[in-house]
Amino acid sequence: MKTFAAIDVGSFELSMKIFEFTKKNPMREIDHVRYRIELGSDTYAKGKIEYEKVDELCRILREFRKIMDSYRVTEYMAYGTSAIRETENTYIILDQIRIRTGFIIHVLSNSEQRFLDYKSIASKGETFTKIIEKGTAIVDIGGGSIQLSLFDKDSLVTTQNLRLGVLRMRERLNVLQPKIAQYENLVDEMVSNQLSIFKKLYMKDREIKHIIIVDDYVSMILNKKFHHQQLEHCFTRQDFFDFLSSFKHKNQEEIARTLDIPEENTSLLFLSAMLIKQLVKIMDVELLWAPGVTLCDGIAYEYAEKNKFYIQNHNFEQDIIACAQSISKRYMGSKSRGEILTKICLTLFDSMKKIHGLSKRERLLLQIAAILHDCGKYISLATMADCGYHIIMSTEIIGLSHLEREMVANIVKYNYIDFGYYEEVGKYASIDKESYLKIAKLTALLRVGSGLDRSHKQKFEMLQAQLQEDKLLITTDNAEDITLEKGLFESKALFFEEVFSIRPVIKQRKKI
Image (tube, rainbow, N blue to C red; front, top):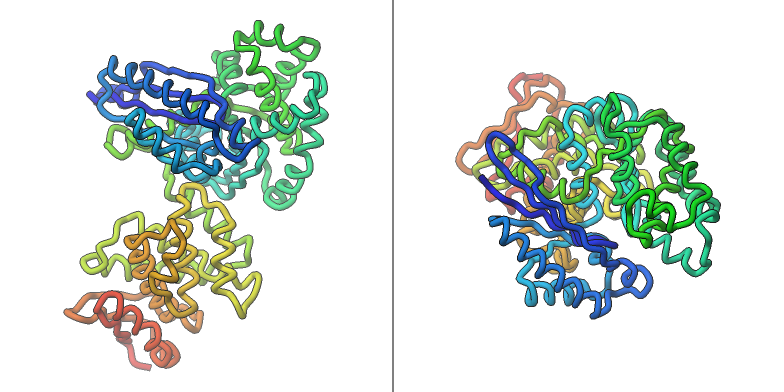
């Protein structure tokens, strides 16, 4: 048996869930502790978290430690989200927390945070699988932003982050001092333009029938209210509208008493509810699902996966790939070339396992780079390398960390221009020497793959790659003339040889 603590240092509360893992019950929640502390109020309004909030945060974490000790917790993971991520004094705060409490807080990028939220939803198993059979949107509402992610045929195909989080919006609205009755119109005016743009750009060829709600207020209340539905925690759009109407003429005190929540939470609850209402209308959905999960559930789910306590039913890696394919399509990437290049590159990767020492995760990064190899041409054929880099760095790929996205962007960039050495590639803080070497190896593989399909005529679609001492023998059965590929292969082979000390050699079995 393992006892594990998942800690979320969020924008407006600190949350900890204690889980127990056994062979019979792979993931059982045994306690949930929440403490309200609005770190985001400082970050979003002032740019940094003040000392008094840090002091309070450390005090709460020490209390969490006592609770963990009472449950004999053996392992924990603690993550900070946008309030920590966006503050100017992130590293100072993290160091203070470590020194004063012993906790090591890992700061999640937005895409990592949303991917964990997504995993928490997937932990609901059959209901999740049934919901995403039709076009589905995940509406993940946080303190600093909301994430809108669209499913098509069971795969996550696009995701966008909008800076419309409830705490950030409340800080803006506080200047106006509105009444509860005014919230709906004000929210409509604040968000309608961004939501309309999202619909125009990403939903024009998609029909969304279902919405999955992830937030810290509305979903928890609706989760309890619709617990006994035929499809648990699901309700129609009319159910949702009726629920909102029941509070139309009540003040904050009455709402808080009816819902059994602190009165100070009502403004955030209303902002979250109004955002959901706007999305229900703009997407014209039929059914809503409030699974009642939090980031802590996603943290625990990931821990269970890594320690093989939990067998996943959903292919999350395929979601990342589908997201990359959607980005390629948006920027007019060649689907057929991407598929062939992916196949070639992965064959080369697998044949070089003994030499490159890279993991399955790096194999995925190479696959994404192959899919996105030509996205830069959408902006400029002359500066495709730099344009591809900036497109990838500006486009969120849910499931990849910021570092991984930067690695993919550099692999795509240096596929077309001379490879930069560490002083150039590593000038960004996130690229350490280990990551730099991975970029070099994956770039070398992508370059050779690109060289083998130089004519875009799929002459190496059916290839074999085999290591022979200091050579990598690449063989094709295709009978077409490969003079072009052979003639221009030298430039691709040189960098590969520099990185691996292995020379790639092209061979054709059948004579023309």
